[in-house]
Length: 298
Image (cartoon, rainbow, N blue to C red; front, side, top):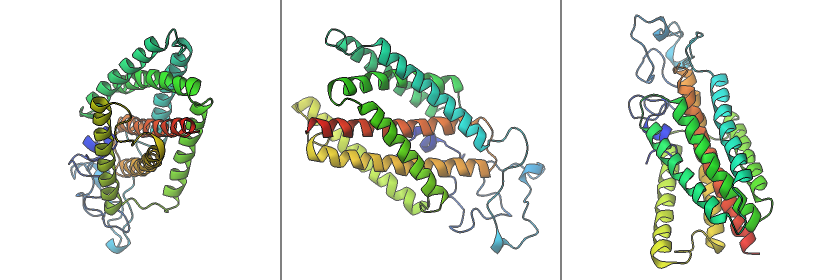
């Protein structure tokens, strides 16, 4: 398991199965210029984009590579636009599911069935996209649409039957985490390096394994399994899940920053949008679960 995002773990912005920024770059000053080893998008020497803009400078003052000022290269505007489009589709389908799939006593089983079906389809689409060599906007937007249906149904159930206003609270919490991590990352308070990456991956692997074991006990033993998703332990693991999501956001920001710096193709912005959407869905679901646990304990 390399990342919470199958996009960034399988391929992301690196062609050599490594994590962009961690392969050959020194910890200070970014990837060493004067070499193309750290740039997965380096072109042959005949390409003007592969030339080193710092060739006349001393390497000890090397700066991170700059994306060439030309069309066809990913920019932050591209990432924002694609992410906004993907999240927009997710939000619209979630709102439609909330409205058209009621969760009253007469319809909850049917609505829940639609939600679970949409979640399974969304999962399949996510895995298909994660193993493709190129971004497919149709697959990514389709994933967002089906994931939105699932989130709309689940959010409506929690909001209607467990904690009124839970969905809005989870949205606000997700937005707060996103903004907080972005500010901390840009301010340099979060340093995404090899040690950070290894710690997050180890923590995520342990978290996922524990949740899988808990699910197995719940399925075959009944009840809440080992109690990792209910009661005091559920609250603790809910907070851990949110913190892990925040760490994955920092990894996502690093991947996007590296992709822009290395001059990734514009279509890579769809992969960035897909990965960020996956992480935001993770954080939202952990918030929703935590709110439900807190209210069920009242």
